[in-house]
Image (cartoon, helix red, strand yellow):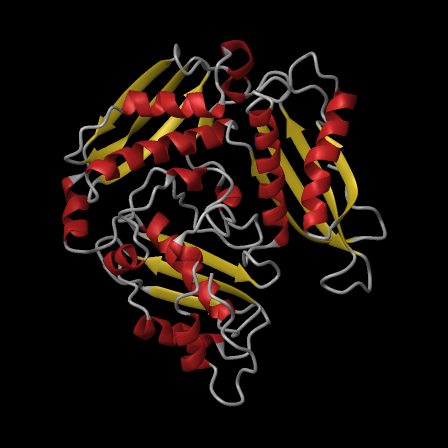
Length: 401
């Protein structure tokens, strides 16, 4: 895509995708299957992977549960909800396409370690928070998800006549030289929106710029530097008719838009004994509360777990040059202040009773339309009182969400 105008300096970039994007469909299928098993068995062990391709969906993985789940019906419900009805344009039909199930039970060796309270796998995870938005997320991420959601809402409101289910959004933020944090912000926005042949690119561009991108940017006091709609040309054929989709292929969409390190494991399709999910949520929760406590404006928390071990073997905190206290001191103290055992994280964040399907579109963090426990600030006062001793911090704990 084109770079920002020469007078602008790029600061951050992020992307989001619509629920009908093939990779996100795979994530939603995996999390819907997970939710179905957890609804009947809160202690189900689930690792569900999905492939969506033209004409068929393959669901595979390892599941051990006492619940009786109609997996095929769960899959078709997702396809129906995202709007896959036309095999020619979308590659799949919710009612007619083939659903293939290849599911096994969890390995008894893995199960043994989890039964003893240990992590279901080794994993490195990162969490992040910033004070630049009320959601404590990078503004580029918030905007990308908001624009993608508005594209999807416009499609739903129109009954799918003008916009298809597939789509992608990229937001590149810049600031004018000399402008403060709250002023001078401008954005380069790229929107790829699936559409019928009856809707020309000029009409589509005008509609998206006026009804989707413009309102989203104005709401955050960001001016448009450039708006590109379908810069490659027409986008009539989408979904699995154009690209195969796999669970776990949109990690930066799920997290922080590429601004933060990623351990490489995805959340979708995994129950909370897998630290790719519970550990990532714990790291976000810690980062949110350290920022809300006034200890830093930006915070990255890293956790490392070993399979079969209940506690993290590595804890890292980085305030990225914005801290009011020593980050190493905080990292050493966190395991004493917060129970980071996998089972304790599951209980504290209520991860046996969460519906995970909503996390599989528009990101896992900082959701204005959801109240996820890992975005809450219930530890902020505790952290402020413990770390912000006299002379080390002059800011308060913030307001709980």
